[in-house]
Length: 238
Image (cartoon, rainbow, N blue to C red; front, side, top):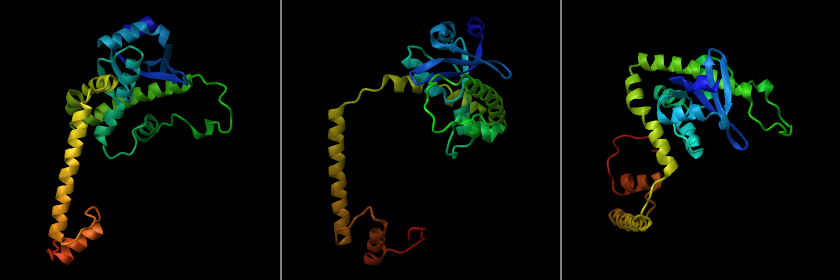
């Protein structure tokens, strides 16, 4: 089965995690079919994913790439990120969790409230393999649905040419971190504080009295009552 996965050009996959970290990979092998491969057996698949020979369809691929980098692997060729696609289609949405997007877009419930146990001790700390299979199947269906919607809205080119290629780049940047000149930043911060203090002093001189320039109410009194500036338009805060 691992060899078959490693021979694929594109995989719908996700990382399976437990309390100890990354347990393995879950991958779609067809409609309503998925397999879970432990990390210690997933080497051929991870090699293909890291080299870019296997393109990856997944949800929140930046997070997946970060986790793989922590394990010493890479994700070089993202083919579809359903979380990113959902964001492009609706930037105002408050959440891009797979469960919510699957419910909203496909009308399917990945985790039923009736099956969630409460008040019990977690003796079984291993991954829920059935749930991981449902998640991968949801990603497979969402990938098709969201790609079609991006195409309908003429946003597929933006997504595939600009947004998607940045995913592994950003993951590697976050993993590696950046070097900063602390002394320079401290000097710059001190300089900015001095300039802000000088500007605040000038504002107080123009107003005739010191006041809290961050207070909308006090600023309104100074501008429109003390200085007599004309009111062009009132906002909700006055």
